[in-house]
Image 1 (cartoon, one colour):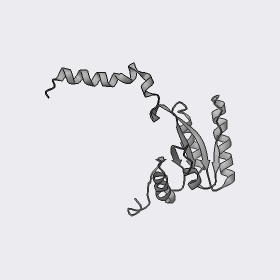
Image 2 (spheres, rainbow, N blue to C red):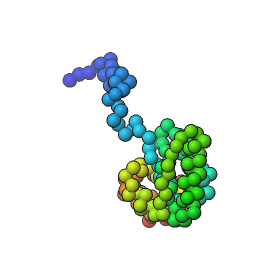
Image 3 (cartoon, helix red, strand yellow):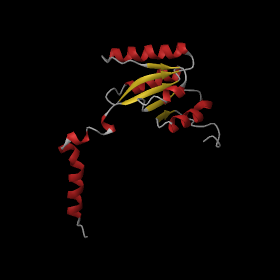
Image 4 (cartoon, rainbow, N blue to C red):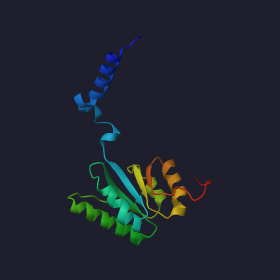
Length: 148
């Protein structure tokens, strides 16, 4: 089968325009829904950088869970996240967890912000990936070459 340049470009343009012409066919795709984000560790990095950064993109993602071994920090994170959403006119209920493995077992969570000390990055990130979650992790991923 021999295809000329004009036929190739026509085919590519028509294939790329299909979602625009028939938007109903794209409604079922996962890319069309918001990403539910969980936060592991609610300390300074989570409070000042990572969570506010995620909360800027309310049309793309929503923070739905906070996990911290310290129940006071988890409750504080829940309150702060809900208040920030309320200022934007969004009612969001945030779940709290004491163990990150419980949060990873929640099928409603799609991605995880890892806001934990550097020496815990590799093991927790690996657990998140094995649970099928996407991760956002600041460097370093691992402390040693063997961990990486």
